[in-house]
Length: 235
Image 1 (cartoon, rainbow, N blue to C red):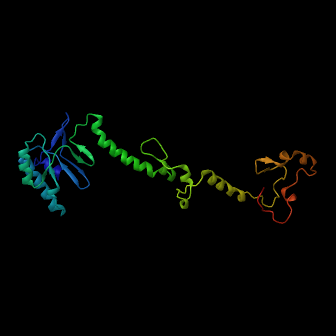
Image 2 (cartoon, rainbow, N blue to C red):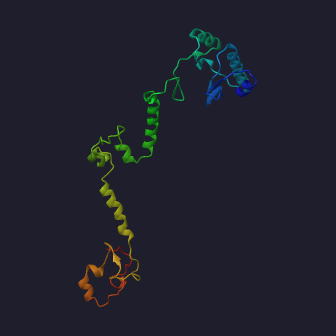
Image 3 (tube, one colour):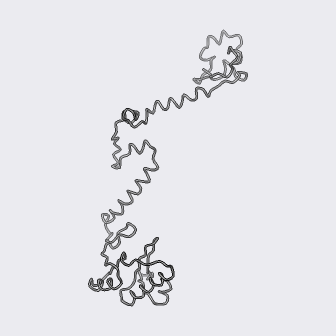
């Protein structure tokens, strides 16, 4: 509707830059900003445009929550027109989509508000991607100080700690699972003296004198295990 109104000369936007890019409005979700040349005829056309939108959509523009801004416009004229439309008079700079509009942004300090907003957003994303332990020890100041004593971190809840537990003990517990996973089966396919056992060495190397005295150097594991349980844990 705005595009058609401009094409028919009913509403006059502005032109920006040296190549005169036409500019008339910004929209995001249910927020709209109209930008146009100052003049009663242009403002009347904008009101008619909003009226057509209300009839076509069944929605209603809330003028009481709307603001009118004037650039190079006398404040008294701005007050009169805003009262006629039924909206409030706005002052520069104002915030739109969390960004300052109308501020001088030539210096780094002018961007401090925007930078802080980005930092707060990025900080939240970063924390969500961290492990539980990382979130407990992270410091926003960048000094990476652990505000909780490590003894309290590994202590159980019942004793007033954070119940993380000693990392060494957890590691040993996880490694201990492999103790009952290493089985030798029936021993018919492993050589008792020549195969690698727990510890990464062969019995013939660990017990070289006994190996020299052994008459059956190529004996199988099943020949050296007594009893009927042939699926016990290797030791």
